[in-house]
Image 1 (cartoon, each protein chain N blue to C red):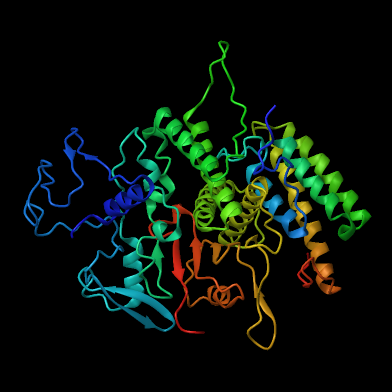
Image 2 (cartoon, rainbow over the protein chains, first blue to last red; image 1 turned 180 degrees about the vertical axis):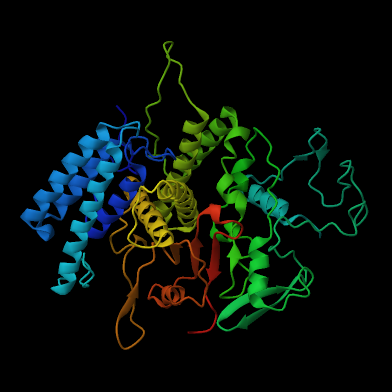
Length: 131
Length: 375
């Protein structure tokens, strides 16, 4: 068996800040319901990998979110994934329902970030940015 | 010596790598020796400076490339914070600097003639931003220098490429990366048919070439600390993602499926930005590059400016060593505070690259060299 490629990181990317999760949501909103990368740069990207990345990100920032918001976001993610899974051809309207849940997630994150700014809580670079 | 600058660059690159000069052929197979003194109509040698092309043979691929010893670009001007370049021989009667810049950006670059097969493609691959933005090296600070359109067609228009050409490229790229570090190898799972033959589509091979180019750049950066090719690959990656996200965003907006709280234009730009940053982070992550750390490769991180009394900062969408990248739908120049803020950051970028979707037309993407004067 050959040695692993020292230049390839096999671990999946997981967003580590609120703004990174917000960027991920923007990407997901564009490419719902299949989330397939049209450029082929990420051939393994699909609905499962996307929601794994999203919920993994929620887990990373769980403390910043607080338990109530964390639970709410995880619930929204489960429901959105089910809707997208039920409309992989984007024909029955459930993709739009799922996308609406992604918008809700955006709003929750925005609330959290606004609160962090109001309370002057620093990000990982020591700056009050909402992250 | 009057030589097509692109030809000269390609020949020089090959000579550096192999010690040999390339053999050039016409479409009908007629061999042209690498001698500038020939008749381009039939390939026959002439004595310098003889031949039909002897008295006017300067061929410039791009409108904003300055041939050696040419006075075509004869001065730089700065007006109202904007800097442009005056092209006396091409635009003699256009005094407004904005028109100069527009004209420069709008100049349609000619695509180089690309042969199929062979291994000459590697020598045409831009490995630095100077090669990606023809004329950048000699442009004055603050000028707007358009990207070479063919930078994004290295794998060629899909319908013009053959599997053989792409496979040649993958072999060549793999060999180049192995030469940098023999421990590198490419892991892939290729689907096979019932007989065990590999099923490789043009699209799949194109993605593989793009992947290998990025890997070559990442390995080079990690082994030698040279970020030049990673800057180029970042540009190419971001451009492709911005183009695709733009199309997708427009389609969703037109269908009324995005319900933006901002204007359509702002919302579209916002989605394009977010998609690009997300994918770029993932791409760097795959290559073992931490784009959230203190290293020279960063995505949407704070870049401090400690030169004034108060610490301020800007967040370029990406930074690779001494270059800042900004993804946007609107044109930004040195007169844009955000761009000036990038230049003022402590990492002292030597240029800012503005990347806009190609759907926005000629001059979509350009580089702005660092202004010479302290701001």
